[in-house]
Length: 484
Ligand code: GLN
Image (tube, rainbow, N blue to C red):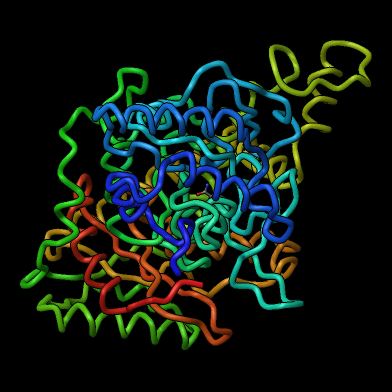
């Protein structure tokens, strides 16, 4: 028999609508799983009382025929979104006990649409990482791990991807700065979309790199992601970088044919030594799209090899500025071990931030410092423009670009966290679209040599999530990927 927690977003909403079950029942079932989880560590915080109260209100609205589009649907939230009255720490010691009294725009839109907050999911500290190993609250386990071989869920939205894949949430919110929705979705066999920069408001999301950060859903199907994004997106006067353009019908675009569409395959993504399993899944994707009537063409993105170094200058530079506010003065952790004001700043930051965050602050401060600014930061900005131009040229020839999401499947806990550059290599396929601000989705499309999920990435034109939803739906149907 299908359990309530086996259902995705659309199925849960259908069951609620037909009164097969109530929101209170759905929420209780998820809470049971969250409370008893001793394996994955996907959630770091939840508030069952509040969730159940909201579920009851939702059931009441339904009984009164006043229901909202997402009424009664449990939604897990990456710990980077401010949720009023709930601990919001970005999985850092420095914000361990921070309770905002305001709500991020994205979450408030989802609650206004009837969604129910079900808990906070773990993440890499301040969203810096690709394995969820930098979380102050401990590592998260990928539900695809076999006994004795614990795998990372990816990062930084690792808790969200793990929770969705393990059916501990029908949907979880993530954020993506250089791949943090797509890479964990790929590692856990889930769908994850990073919308166009500006599609969703960043207000109330703890900032990492403000010119790159975007919020998006992680779900078990393409259409589920479309339903959620529909309710998250839109202009917000509180975020001057959010775009004042109409949000199209994403749900409808999931069933549009792709016959005649041109799909670009970038030659620069055919890395030397690309693992066979990844290559094979990519070939399958190409075949499926051809069979659906799309035309496959070669495109070139000549500056791809500079994307990773560019990202690892731009993102730390912005992070070093954004994280300057954590100094122990107004909120967050404050060291007790202090002599004077300056000592308070430095001790607070030395004790409050983890090693990866400190590394990024150091790099960022260095590349922005007088004497190095032109050589690093300014140069990186220029290369970023070149990367944008590469995509503009490619999109003169094609409607979307198909690539693998990651160069490998999920790796073992501890395998890559010794050498930061090895870890950064994970982002090689996801970072270019981030630098260009383009929408990109990861669809589970096959298995690696270990039998763990591999995703394919579709990159679309700016504000054309519709096309990647259409093509993504075809990939999903053809891959017929079986979740755990
Ligand atoms: N893994 C990348 C990093 O560590 C991307 C993180 C993200 O998208 N938030 O910066």
